[in-house]
Length: 84
Length: 190
Image (cartoon, rainbow over all chains, first blue to last red):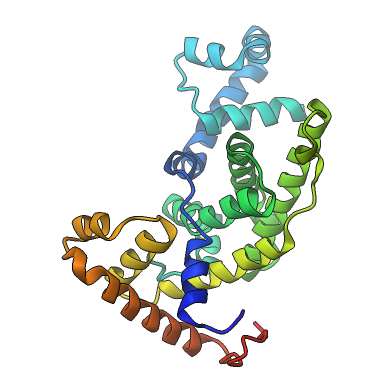
């Protein structure tokens, strides 16, 4: 790192502005989203109709079934279905 | 912004299923990932958001594969770079009309500055909460003296001198952590 003069420090503090709060919160909620994920995946494995509905329209199916279709859960499910 | 626990300690706690540690780890590296995506790779906001979520999802899923807890920062940096490149490549396949979207090479100067900036932000943890708040609000959040004064219940007229004093303390904190660099501004080993 260059010399610790105050101008350089000011520049470096400014180089890391906060990420949008909603993004941070969504990432922080990953563990609880994963708990929901396990429940949904288990049901999708046992119930073909539910699985097909999820693949066809993930967000609406989750909402209809009473799950909160929040970003971390949706992303995790999309990745899970893409991998399978 | 307060950081009394090291990143490596947070990683160990995350492995044990500590959700508060996970939240703290995300908080610790959120600016870093965001900066790499938006400054290093100049991603647009919606692409940066997808990258941000994907990086932390991968970190969460693969934390057990991290060989050394101390390596969390370079690991996150590498993951972020990879996800950004993938994003740019998939974007350029979908939309080849915008030439700026085709470049998947990061701005390496910006990335080096971001790494230095993370060191400085880590060092801020050694300052008083007041100093951390004043410096972060003024330089990173671009708040005015008036806004800072109202938020921290301080006279706006004292903010400039506080900023100056806190920068001196921050410099001392950094000099206490690392070899003192040359006055010419030459590189130091870190």
